[in-house]
View 1 (cartoon, helix red, strand yellow):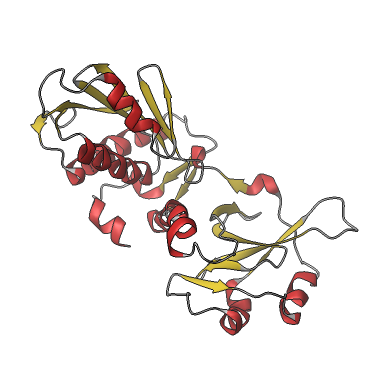
View 2 (cartoon, rainbow, N blue to C red):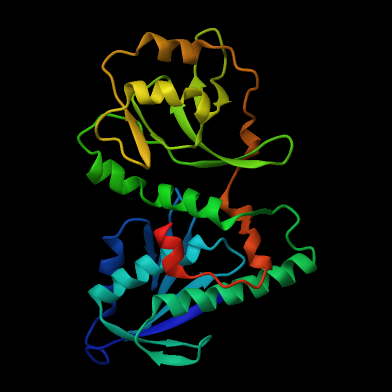
Length: 288
C-alpha cells in the first residue's frame, strides 16, 4: 500500500526536460537513478520512497504506509527541496485537492492512511515480527540519525571524533532502548541521556565485545572530559591520549554482552500510537 502525489511544473508543459529532473536527483544524497525513477534510501534512518517521471511535465511521488512516522517527515524534507528547485503545483488523490503542496496536510493525511493500514494489518495478524514503539522514542532515534551528516560535514567537521548512529536494542525482557556506540575508547560524540554500547577488540578475543553502560553511570566521566563544542544534545569527548579512567572503563569486565540479533531495523518498527485515534502534527514532531 502506498501514498502518491503528482507534481506539475509551473513553467508550463514540456519546458523542463526529463534529463533535467534526473540530473537533479543524481546530485542529491541517498538517491539511485534508474530509468525514469529516482529511488531514495537513507541507510542511516532506514527511510525510503521514490520519485517517478511519468511524462516530461509530470512527476509522481510514492511512499509506502505501514511505516514509522519519520518516513513522512523525511519525505517532506525531500519534497520541499524538490519544489525549491522546480516550483510545481500538485495533485493529491488522497486529499482530492490540487494546488500548492502543504507539508502539514500531507503528513496528517499520510498518518491517517498509515494508521488505518496498521490497524488492518494487525487485526489480520500480518505484523508478527513488528515492534510497536512510542513516537517520542522513534522521533529521537530519527532526528539524531537524520542529522548525523550535518554534524560530520558542518557543525563538527574540524574535530577528529567518532560520531555514532543511534540504534534500537531489544533486551531479553522485551524492553527496547536507544543506544549509541563508543568504540575502542576513541574520541567521541555522545548523545545526552542515551545508554552507551562500549566496544572493545582485545587481542585475546576472537571477536570484538560489546556491552551496555548506563549513561547515568558514566555521566560524571563525560562531564570531566567534554569539550566546549558540547551542547544540550550531545557531549564532545576529545583527547590526544586516552585518559586512565576511560581506559579503566573499557577494560572493565562486562556483566552482559550484547547479542547482535537484538539490534532492530526500521523494517519491523511501527509507532505504537498508530493504533489510537489521536492526531499528531508534523510541526510538533520536528520541534521535539
